[in-house]
Length: 149
Image 1 (tube, rainbow, N blue to C red):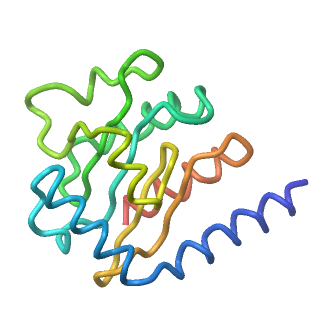
Image 2: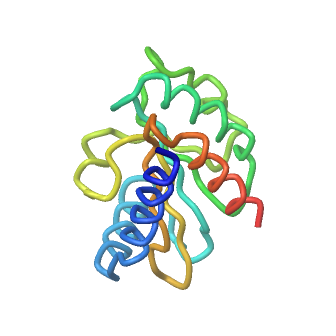
């Protein structure tokens, strides 16, 4: 079972690494239009917190990503209402890299539908990690190591 999960995780990573330039441009346009981020090139990662999919996964991801709330290398986009996931740390006025977005706008991107993270590198989408219950610990370990580097 662990080998299957490892292979599945590897396939997800390899598949997400093959994203084309069109997705990057769509993401760039989205960030400019929805939250007025003018320089996507200075961003290494974008975390998405919403309430679609596994409730426990979303809650756990929101707790884990909170430690990066003041990290200047990334932004956090929150579409959760707060009814299921505690978003109180993300809506404080002093937080500069967190933005509220409408889930419908996020769905238009067709990049990520659940809580997760997109890593950017060299003006491309490098990796997309969408949080899933079966391999959440491995995903969070990967996310932590990638943000810390």
